[in-house]
Image 1 (tube, rainbow, N blue to C red):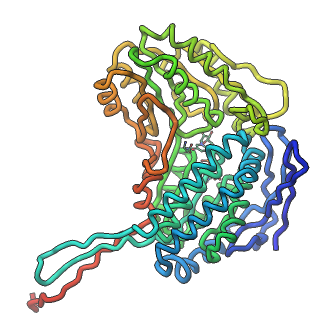
Image 2: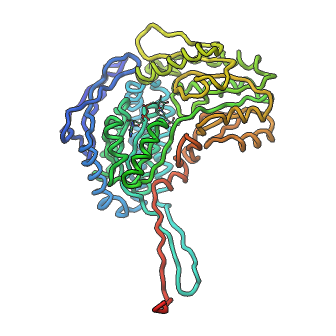
Image 3: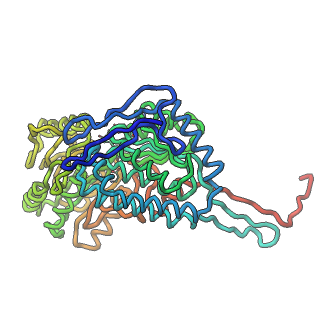
Length: 504
Ligand SMILES: NC(=O)C1=CN([C@@H]2O[C@H](COP(=O)(O)OP(=O)(O)OC[C@H]3O[C@@H](n4cnc5c(N)ncnc54)[C@H](O)[C@@H]3O)[C@@H](O)[C@H]2O)C=CC1
Ligand code: BAL
């Protein structure tokens, strides 16, 4: 039995108990060979919450063996879709029951407001599990007529097997749900590696996996450093698929490791530098609200953050103050303050990265119109920061910052707007605000992005696919499209009459 930690809930006399071991075969266990630990930090206070076991390469082997055994016996093709659906729905119910505690733990480890973790991240995650519970008994192949006389063929959509799932720290519960729900619906088993920055809710969710009644080995949770556990999973010979969300740099490493090991299937949901275009016909107040939310939600730590806003020249001077006003209305504060709409960034590393970009923006001559001043209090807080009059060569315009930092530039024609928007190696998302229907159709078609929002931003739905073009990724999550990531298609040719003339 591995140990537990008690984490105090601010403003209450309650404590949350977290198992600090690895979750393998439905049990919390110590590492088989290592004493390495991961310190979990509260980004709002910079205090250590607890230390947990860091999985070694050997622990990954043990978790994979557990997932393989489950795949071959109690899960995989040995369980009906109806049963997978029932268990997914049960898990969704348990997460809903525990929403407040999970949201508190998410806030303590990640910094995001409890209110948003509970009412957005967890509500959407429960919805995701229920959405894929609906699919579990509807995953079917095709019957294919071949010659109508002696042969038919059919396809089976088999579960792909053991899935390594490597998730980031920006939406720990949501990314867990996006990975777990379609994999289980298809009959796959899982080795889940949460980010070393935010492993606590994945450990807590593992307790609910047992309570829901999943057989041992179906979901294993192995917190580990990316360079240890993540790398071992990517090159593992008995993992059939890796699903990853995180940086483009790490995505490349995972793909290379997959190629050099067993050519496992890989899906990558990577970075972005998404544009939002504001055309002169737009409702400026509404467009400013979406634009502010588009970059500031989750403190800008969002793969699809709309971190470049381009405004048509005729409305630029009118739009900019409205945008600045909207952004300054956001209350940035401790995640346990119900008023807080934005917490600190997740870690000291991320804090330093965001500030290095703010300094670069200043040095390269962008006009600072909001924020850009450090706070003196403890915690990794960064206030909403807006730079105006940016040019395409600036670092703040080119690179993914992953913080509450917005670059605002100007365009005159629709053609120029599209050119600026597409001037990036990324292609995750884009937004356009216009009341000209023809323009909405033309521009949404021309934007090189996996998701385009028209007169909205950042709102996703569990039944709509999400993923990137260009260097923002490969494959799709959510919607029916995600099922393709977790299935392997088998074609069965059935001869019921043809005799072969032999020798040929
Ligand atoms: N697309 C997205 O949603 C995310 C993008 N990012 C971007 O990445 C930047 C750096 O953040 P990081 O936490 O360093 O991102 P990262 O991409 O390195 O981390 C994401 C996950 O990958 C794992 N990982 C790290 N190295 C690995 C390796 N060699 N093999 C397999 N797995 C590995 C980590 O342990 C974590 O679970 C951020 O500033 C942001 O720009 C970060 C998190 C999420
Ligand atoms: N915004 C969707 C998920 C992500 O940021 O990784």
